[in-house]
Image 1: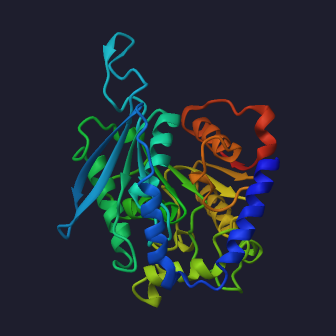
Image 2 (image 1 turned 90 degrees about the vertical axis):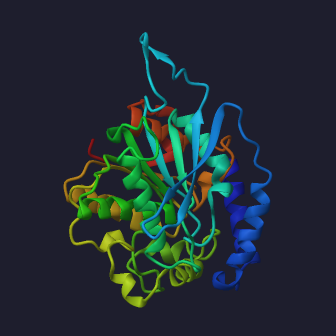
Length: 340
């Protein structure tokens, strides 16, 4: 796969250039760069984009963006009127280490996901660190989920067809929302997708996960950046011991949604995501887990023409709709767990 090899080489070069940067000092510059990139996004005419809000329990209006595919016939199906939710609604939490990334930066990816998966997508602009510490982002995401499941945000949502989805720190939030939903008993997600999620509490040099050491120096996201993002996010050291920060340390992972975990071969978070999938399986949940060969952290934001991105959507369609996985593409991934 020459293109992927070129991406890996570029990732190593970029990582070397930013060596020594402290994310706790440079996150603001990254926000500026992301804001500039966001201004270049062109709205796809096949997708309607609407902005709404959800009010948090402390009175904050959480910005939300709704992406509705327009190239699907929502008006008639089998001669009957159907609503915008005929396949389901994806509730999306973006990545960025809880400090970077926002809905503007992810708009292109959100439009593409809505179109590729033929589902409406609701993206949450949760409050970010370090201005807002744990558990503010989690509570924002939880409250949006609660209102969505209760039918308070979009009138036509079928709770059985809501898919919770997050990448990286967003995958962390998705997993934590599902745990919190079980424990509070206000709603129960049926399906979740976690893309290279952070789910553990130790990313030191002595962590139990080899991928943090093996992939934490040369592939864009470094081990030191992970630690820096965590330090900006947590309110106090004791937060590291909370399963709502690190779902993998939860004593009980039963009664969780049917889950798809996708890891990336050269991602420092690879091992913890895969072990989380194993733990979910051991505790009685339906799980599928795939490792993307040659993948690095954050690859999902790359153009759709790149094979890693195309193959990820193929796996998601397989998980959500039962589409067959093409045999000729299977060398591009390793299926680690399939209990469906």
